[in-house]
Image (cartoon, rainbow, N blue to C red; front, top):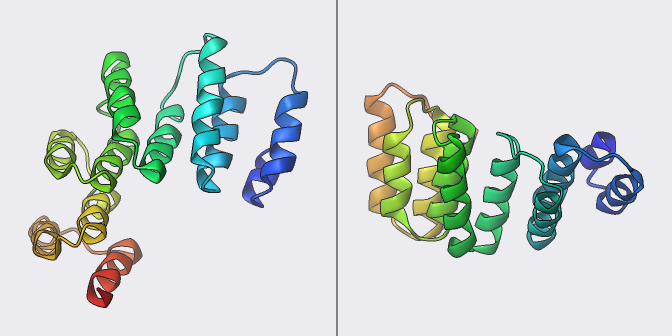
Length: 173
């Protein structure tokens, strides 16, 4: 399955998934990531809905896929439900899930919530900050973008290709 996912073969991935008789959380996560990475965000959420009917425990790989789907759909309502579920199971301190939440809130123009999540993350990396930068750029909030970049600089975080890509987009607007 992962080989098909890596090649962006959503149809073949789904065929293999459907043929698996004893599914587990890993197979569902791979299928959700497959759809989310190929911009089939509704399909990713439908796989999650199916997974929930199996009563599997969601893990720290499940939520980033779902948050990416919510971001792609600009679905704040579903994103809020996922955030609530993340807190309920105690994954709100996971950096990768936190990065997904910052990104989702930013893409849904909820910058106060995005910033709150960023500030409450016990561990942050350049991706965490890039999620905030990208959200501001997408919404045309260039002064806020520069402020976040200044914060990154004061924390001695070096911008990476993701930071630069967002800043280039800001310059084009």
